[in-house]
Amino acid sequence: MSDFMQIVDAHGETQIKRPTVYVYEAPVRVWHWVNAAAVVTLAVTGYLIGSPLPSLSGEASAHFMMGYIRFTHFAAGQIMAVGFLFRIYWAIVGNHHAHQMFHVPFWSRTYWSEVAHELRWYFFLEKDPKMYVGHNPLAQLSMFFLYTLTALFMITTGFALYSEGEGASSWQHALFGWIFVIFPNSQQVHTLHHLGMWVLATFIIVHVYAAVREDIMSRQSIISSMISGERAFKGDR
Image 1 (cartoon, rainbow, N blue to C red):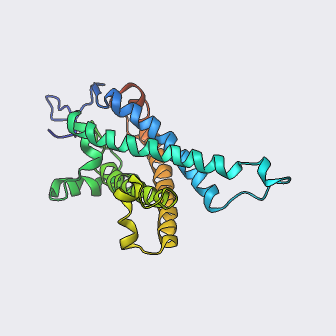
Image 2: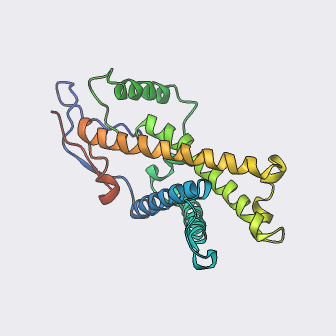
């Protein structure tokens, strides 16, 4: 089924009749907001771990600032990891739109044509937007590369770094210790993990901008869709 929704009248002209389509199921919406909070928490605490705050006055034994920051980072990372596993599960059992962030139809010529159209639309070279029930093709592509693959990389390297403190006998090392076979230098893993944070931060900025822009310019609901689950089409201007 195509995600491009259009209604053609008797004169052959496209008319959007203000339909409302249920797109994002409740588990997807809950995951989206919990994951968003976890990623923001990880970004802030991860930055502070890499660039610690100035030393506090008084006895070191009276402060546990970095300990709280690290604990918060580790807790948010485990929430993100569990959420990612759940999101994979829901991509299998959920509706058609639930698997879009894990799937890009690279072999489809039509898909790439739609990606090119969306690029022109975002660069203000197209006057008329196309209506999509789920993610538009460009959003699907960017989510796959900038979020899905990056999140998988961050979870993998994050647990690998965590295993250094837990020891070689830990389950974290058993599952993720192979990272240090590929990157024997632990500092290199730290650096790549830190760079991954900036990829996710860039994605968040672009994601929020695109959602707000589409809500204003494309005549379809975007932000409210991730609250209600329903995408409303506002008709011709």
